[in-house]
Image (cartoon, rainbow, N blue to C red):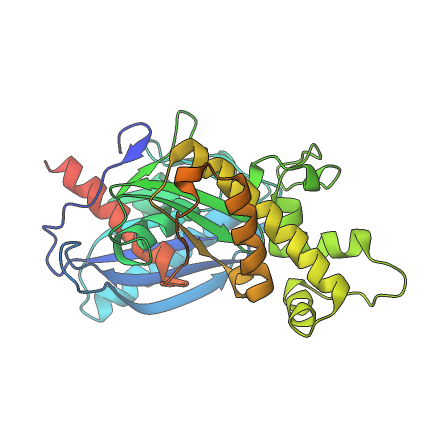
Length: 337
């Protein structure tokens, strides 16, 4: 559906066309009706009629696919009832996505049985609409690059730090996916802090995700916790305790964020982005986290890259829906060129 390695930038001759967008994650599947303005204008996209259902990933990939199709059909029927004309469906999905075939190439343990699912064909056959799919983190990156914190920066690295860690490289509105669809996998950058900690991809050789994602921060805290320190329920609790000055919480949050910053520096040295945009629940961890992240980045980045801005994403949960719609619009423009 799109050229290998890229999803071309949006050529906005789309007026007020509306797209039905989906964001498929390990916890929930979100959907919204997205109206896209021209990227040359100062207007922002409008995301309306947002609805969510649980992914229930532990039931397996077939079950997730079937419930996604039912969800899509129900959404299209509602749009038709309300007189909303939908021109196409954009999907951002967890896992490594082959946009040209609409198939999930691989997925981590967070989505068992998701690899091999023919999502584009299933949704297209059920709805009768054209469908285009990209990775969920890629969709998020496209949204932030075209309409969010990355707007105006020609090359952007988008990083999502939540339950896991994902990333996307967006070059002048194009999603760079690489030869195997895995470009931008920030969470699987190597770092010594992760050695011995099991990553969602299965390795214990030392990836950053199992020590710097929301889940990873909590695991790191527990793995090193002294007997005289109370357990923490999650990363948010650790961040609150760090903000209150608890020494061990500050130590763990600093250690984790600094390691992530060093990994971002490594990626920055490789791709030379104009900006790095960070989104997800962990970016709310407070000043301790941001300071350590920036220090780690500055220490690892080449001198010319040290001034690269590390920005907080602006679009929140709307970013992947906007990006999925924008990716479909680009795909549609290519097909009709």
